[in-house]
Image (cartoon, rainbow, N blue to C red):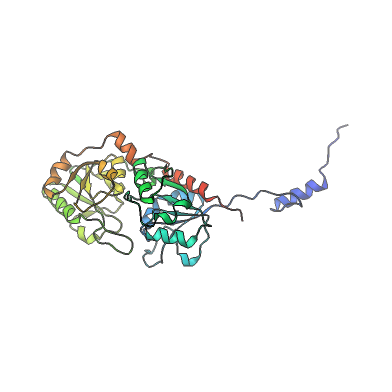
Length: 342
């Protein structure tokens, strides 16, 4: 005769309670981990374009990542990056600062030492230590950058000797497929006039003169606007309806004021020429990816016609790993957040 053991009353009760998300006395049922709550404070307080490339990966994970802004006065209707103000008193498992300028430093002070803090470079910063870097240097659980070269500059800005984890740029997760149009030059602007969101870079007049010289020589000019640039300054040319990195697919060469997008465009296979005003101060690695640097409009045409990509070693140092960068960055944030279970 076969004897079949019957479940005990205790096991039946425990199983029923577990199915309801409860547990019998003395036993625990593991709860599903809660998605981390992460706040990001950028050097440009309303600069949501720095967080936007992360949105697809954030959505895939179902995480709660929001950008801290002083108020909603500079947030455009239809903005896709979730924003929150300190007055909203948002809960956070991690505060990410993208530098030690005033707004990130203010946010770090407001949230205090009880909130874990990470520093992630999402745009270039010069290597000189920021005046407020000392306020939270010891609180940083994590420091990340897109590339080794960017990391060296970012560490200098933060005044830290901590290890900088290189994760790549989320913008390189979807590099455009080159389809260059004959004699097409992409003009990369910076910001001509400072505003509440951030500062400006010198060199617009040089770039305007260079664009005019190139057009007079038969080049077709497509302008890749910085998100904060005034489009009226460039209205005589075709202004790209897509971001500069995607617009670079159409160009044989790009020319502009060196900025964060320069390494990305070089990574997409488009040579870049730098227009350098004597007053411009940018990290050396942004200049290293340039085929050449010009200081007058007369130099623009020969520089464009002889432009070439940098050596592979330079690209690797300046661009960092390509593909999967948003996932790598969020992985590091998730580990630093150590979310609590509600």
